[in-house]
Structures are given as C-alpha cells and as structure tokens.
Amino acid sequence: MSKLIYLETDEEITDVIDKISKVEDKSVSLVIPRGSTLANSIVNLKLLVKRSKALKKEVALVTNDNIAHNLASQIGLPVYESLDDARKGIEEKEVEDAPTIRKANVGTPTESVGGVKVHQYDRDGSEDMTEENSKFEIQNPNEREIAESPEVIEAVRDADSTTLAETQIGADKLQDEDEMIQESDIYPKPIPEPINEKSDYKLVKKPMEPEMRHRELSHGDMGSNQVFGKMRGAKNRRRTIIGVISGVLILLLVLGAYVALPKATVRLSVVSEPFNSTADIKVSKDATVVNAPTSTIPGKITSDEQDLTKPFAATGTKNIGKAASGKVTVYNNWDQNAVSLPSGSKFVSASGINFVSTAAASIPGATVGLQNGQFVIISSGTADVNVQATEVGEQGNIGATNFTITSLPSAQQPKIYGKSTAAMTGGTNQVVKIVTDKDIADAKASTENELKDTITNKIKAGLAGSEKLLDSAILPSVTSENASAKVGDQVDTFNYTAKIKINALTFSEDDFKTVLLENAKLKLAADKQIVTNNSQNVKYEVASADVATGTITLKGTFDGFISGKYDTNAMKLAIKFKSVTAATTKLTSYPGVLSADISTSPRFLRSLPALAKRITIEFNYGSTSLTTSGTK
Image (cartoon, rainbow, N blue to C red; front, side, top):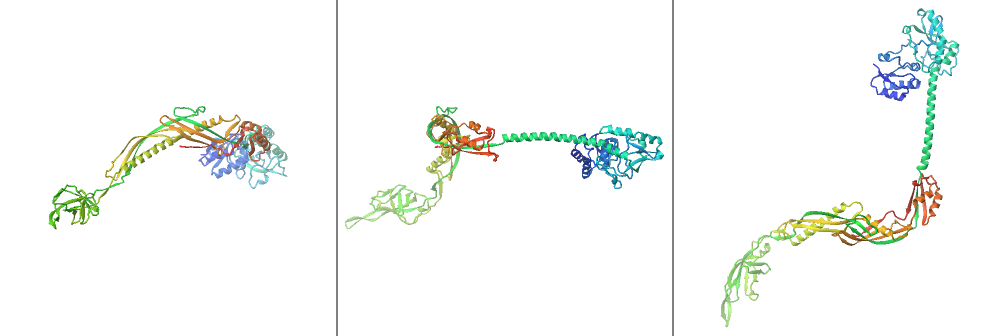
C-alpha cells in the first residue's frame, strides 16, 4: 500500500522532497489540493521525479487538478484520481501504443468525423511525446506557428458502438464547451468520464482543420497561462516588496553605521610641574571610615594562635665506657713516721693521666740509719695502692710509670711518690650524645621564629585587596613552651614545643593613599590637579606603633606632578564631527596643551564621530600608574 502525504497549496518543492526522504515506505503518494504551486510547475515536477529516483522512491500524485494531470503526464509521473485509487494503486489507464493522454471529460470539445463522435485531447504540444509523434510537438502555445497540414492524435470511438445521435450531440456541444473554457476558473473542476465509455476509444491521426488550430492557439492553454501569469505576478510583487524593504533596511544600516560605528582616540600632551606634600596619618582600630580632615584611616586587629613542635638533634657527647685501673707502689722517704692516704687520693702519671686510689692506705715510715755522723734513710717505707683512672676510656691504659701524689703537700710529693711496675688495663670507650644548654637555647629560638612566621604569613594570606600588614604592627606572645629532654640527658634527638599568639594591626594602603592625596589636594590651587607621572610615588614610614592599643602613626610623603584641569566632556562636544585638522587646532588652543594626536577608526575617516561618546580623550603625563613604597 502506498504511503499518503498530504500537501498544502503553497508547499515548496524543497519541503516536499524533505518529507519524502523521511518516509520509510518505498511507494509514496502525494495528495495535492487544487491550485498547488508544486503541481502547476513543470520544473517542480521534473525535480520531484529526479529526486525521487535518487531516493529510490516510487512517487505518484493524487489530485483532480486538470493542469496537474496534464503536466504530470508529460514527464511520466503517475497520477491518481482519488484516494481510493491511490490506496489500491490504480492509475489512469493509458491507451496502448500511445503517449500518456488525459481522459476525455464531458466538457471536452468534440466534433463529428465521418459520422463518428471524436473527443479531442491535449493539443498544446507541451507534453513529451514519443519519438514517432515528436514532430507534432509545439513548445510554446503563444509562439507556435501553424504548420501546413498539421496532424493531431485523437481518441475516436468505433462507429459500431457510436450512434448518430451521440455524434450530433458531441458536435452541438463544441461551441458551448469553448465558451466554458474561456469563462471557467483558472483551476477548472474535472468532470468524471462516463465509465461505460472508457474502452470505446482508439487513436487516429487526422489533419487539424485551420479553425480548430486557431481555437487551440487562442484557448487551449488559457487556464495554464492564467495560472502561471498570476503566480509570476504574485512572485514579482513579493520580490518588489522585499527589494524595497531590503533597500530601506540597508540604507538605515548604512546611516546607523556611519553615525554609531566611527570612533576616535585623542591623545593630549599636557604641561605638568613637580609637586611634593607630606602628612602624618593615623591608623586606628577604633576608626570605621576614612576621615581625610583628621588624617585618620580605619585599622583592624587580627589575631591568631598556633602551636608548633619541632625535633632537634643533641650536639653534646659523653663517653660512657670503662675506666682503666691497676696497682701503684707508694714509696715513703719522708721520715720514719707512717703516712696515711685516704681513699680517693689523687695520682697523676708522668703523661698527665689522673688516677685516684680506690681504698685508704697507710704507707710505713722510712728506715733511718747513722752514716758519717748523720741520720740517713737506709730504706723507704712502701705499700701497694689500687688506683683507677678518673675518666673512662682507653686513654687510661698506660704502661709502667711514675706517679705524683698530688693530694699530699707539695713539700712531701718529691719524697712520697708512686711507681707502677705493670700497665694499667680495662679502659674502654663508648661515646654517646647528650643535650647541652646551647641545644635548648637554639631549639627555643628556632621554634618560636618559625611559628611567628607561620602565623604572620597566614594573616597576610587572608588580607584582601590593598590591606597591608607591617612587621612593626605585629605583637607576638609565647603562651607555653617545653623541651622533651633536659641538659645532660643522653639522647640523640629531642623535641621542642611552643605555643604563640600574635595580634596584628592591618590597614588599607588605598585608604592611606586617598588621605595622603586628599591632604595634598588641599594645598593646590583651584585650577590645578594632581596627575600621574613616571616619577610619581607615595612613601611612608612607621613613626610609632602600639599594637596593644591598636594605633599606628605613619609619616607619608607624596612626590608627583600637577597640571591644569580640563573638562573632557566640553572638549568632546567642541570637536565632534569636525575634521581632524580642525579638531587638532581646537584642542591645542587650550592652555597647557602642547600637542594633540588624533586617530580615527575606520582609519580612512578624516573627521571625528558625530557622537561625543564615541570620542576618547587621553592625557599624557608620562605614566598611568601611581607607585607606592613603604617601610616595615
């Protein structure tokens, strides 16, 4: 079954092709109303056939429009009379061995030929005919020339099935039907063909009579010509209206662009002179707004508290090895009396190694005898004493040597002394790390400084815009601190923990500039103004700071340039729509204006825009920025 697509009267060919392409069915029937612009154009129909083949679609028309029937028959496009025929796939019957011909209607002109009723068909020559009959084709009915002995193809009912009365009736209606064609609507209504006459016709070739030829030329294509004439007229009127509207719009756009699009930039070089001003500006946490007359700006106290624990290495060392020990023989040559040596008596070797006795000892007195009339010591009193090095380590493992007993009076030391006959042994080294006083002090300073920097950087990171925090406006306080080891502890590393709170007073640098510049303006004449310059800057230094009370006094200095005041709006109104030369002359006539450089856009324009707001005026004082520096 063929897919039905219903079209509107003014449906465009592009829309129709688009609808066909979206249909999945292979066979498509277009239901076309009377007077459709699609069906009344041979170009549209040919394009429809071409695109349908490209889309591999079988397309047919469903219409009762005579013109649509005739045009479709010329290009071999199937046409159905009704929706029922379209659904059943029943096309108009074609006569065998003949080109596609519209079926005769009751209103079709007839004439009597040899006593046989003849129904005449499309003779305008516009349809595509077979090669055999192409010699009878006439392309334009308004320009055709009547050929000698033209022939026409007519469908003739057999004489056997046609009565003389029917032939006469057909001949009598010829004149009336001609009048009906002339007076009919440009889209004539088709008259159904009697069913019992469908198979009673055959094609015959006969000469066309001159009067018939004349009638064909004058009336045959009247409906089609009127249709296309009205269509062309409507299109021409639309084109004319669109053209006029487009022209007006283009003109308005051109005028608007001429007025609104041009722009100009004016750069003026102006005389300036140096200017200096100083002022003391107070930052107060109690101020809420900038007060230029009192030179006060708001300050803000920001507080933060953090703790920090850092590890540190112990730098002190300690030898916890074993001390050397041995035996020393003490000799008493002092006198005949015994000498007592308490435990811990000090013995110093000849190499300087210190030892102490580990137990008390009594050294017998010397043996005295008389020689040459004098008492002399015949033998020394001796006793063995156990000693131990005062310091651990291998350095106490010394060989046999002499010892001085330093715990005795210095006068007795040469007479009472010690001597070892064997080496000291047992001294070993084992060095370990211990915490020193310096280690604790360094850990305290490092932890506190890092914590101060961390808190300060955090406060600075939270500043918005031009907020400023000076180092002199920071007040730190240590709330707690401790070390995990004390001095002398045997450890390799230890931790130091500190907790610090910082109060900081911040201020807006823009507020400072504003007050400083306002203070400077008060010192200017009424016709002068501060201007930017590459050597212009604002400096400040802290005169005093008391974060506890929330006040800072800043000493500010302004070094810059001043020039005369100019009303830029008045300047724009004075030069708008003037030539570049005239505008330059006008601008350089202002006091203090050294030169004027004018650039226009588009560049080919030699006059300034008509709109003052499209003009930009820039003043050149050597710089466009205000630099600021301050002390911490």
